Amino acid sequence: MNAPLLAIENLTLSFGASAALNGLTLAIQPGEMLGLVGESGSGKSAAALAVLGLLPQGAQLTGDIRFHGKQARPEHLRGRGIAMIFQDARAALNPVRCIGRQIADALHAHQGLRGAALQAETIRLLAEVQLTDTARLLQAYPHELSGGMCQRVGIALALACKPDLLIADEPTTALDTTTQAAIMQLLHGLIQRHGMAVLFITHDLALAAAHCRRVAVMQAGRVVECAASQTLFADPQHAYTQKLIAALPHRMAAQPAGEAVPLLDVRALRKLYPMRGTAEMLAAVDGVDLQIAQGEALGLVGESGCGKSTLALLIARLLDASAGSMKFEGQDIAAMPADGFAGTGQRRRIQMVFQDAAGSLNPRHTAFAAIADPLRHLLGLQGKALDSRVRECARLAGLPENLLNRLPHQLSGGQKTRIGIARAIATEPALIVLDEPTAGLDAPVQAEILALLENLRLQLGMALLLISHDLNVVRQSCGRVAVMQHGRIVETAPTAQLFSQPQHPHSRELLQALPQIEA
Image (cartoon, rainbow, N blue to C red; front, side):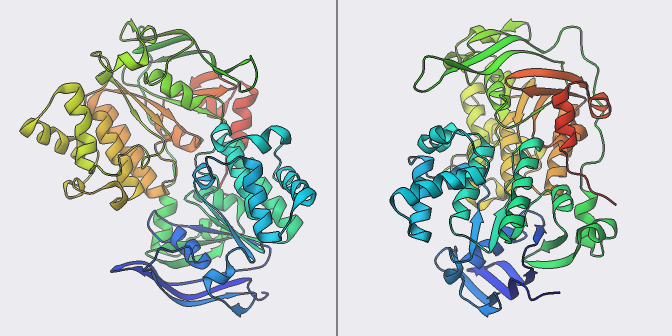
């Protein structure tokens, strides 16, 4: 084997008394895509930030980092041979600076380009990451782009450094399977054209198996196993690797048959938005029909930008529809303005678990306060009754009581998701809308959350609308699946039927893009 492009030896990283890396040793070969997997908190992202010197003040880092065979300090590597794609693509972009200027800033800083050369290279980078409609994109802001488009912009920014090594930290989190496949194809193309290597950090073991020739498994700040992908997944040697693979989604939930009168009956629902600079309207949701039975779990899948999250906000009555009806428990709730729905008795009957578990929590409020908030405002609970109900909901959601006094930044991703679930079930809803509740979680934590939701559904008799880009999650958790494309539901079928005999071309396209682990 050739000399490694990047060699990490016995790297340790601590923040005060807390150790993030504990003797990490890892090597990346030129031109390879190395997968790095492990549970949340295992040190994957910390390793990437340590290599680039993107650590907070006071962090203690020891060990040896060699790049191109030469020892180097992390801060000397940043932007000089190593670039990074961050996990939250939209948050990594400047929200008040247009896309064209952000790419131009990177090109000027790293290549010294100016004037016409700067403009030409900006356009070339957009084309290289397969972004069309360049004139519009140069003037667009991050909030005007889909998740997949933001991810491509992030890759373009990284390419502005002309890196030999690209660190991709969860670059496909919360993307649908077809967009995910397109991003992975783009990364492989970049490897071939530029000869660069990619450190691919992911919680998705199936994705790592499908796209990486070698996979390294991290636990407690160190690599416990590293092998060729096919060997590792067929015959894992370490007990921790065996645990990760065993936690992959593999079963299908049993679900009740639909009732004659559904809990929620959505008909011809539309949501229109004005297109900036024109008199035209864009239909984010375009004539959706959808029914959810009492106590069932319905999965909603589709590409990024197809309207899934907009539909979720409409059903949760956090957004007003432009047209159509939504009968919930026999009453048309679409006729009620969203800002007035909170004052009705039905607000407590429909709750939502948001995609960004951390972003949906007030950073200054404890876990207890987050769960207590709907109980105070919707049920009027106070004192001992409030305290008792908060603790009961935390127990039902699998959140230890000793974490109730912690702030969001003191909790893991899985724990923050449990807070969102506890908050949602607090008012005893009949329907919970879950928008990507397992996005960004590693396989064991994901399995725990899905098992929790299934138990709560059966125990409390509530219905779930589970929105996910991960078809394996939906297959495991839902009795029926609805497929969305361009604002419309194009197919709805029992889960087993949809996965074995999809009828619509877009359903087949999504399934064909699903990563598979080959034994």
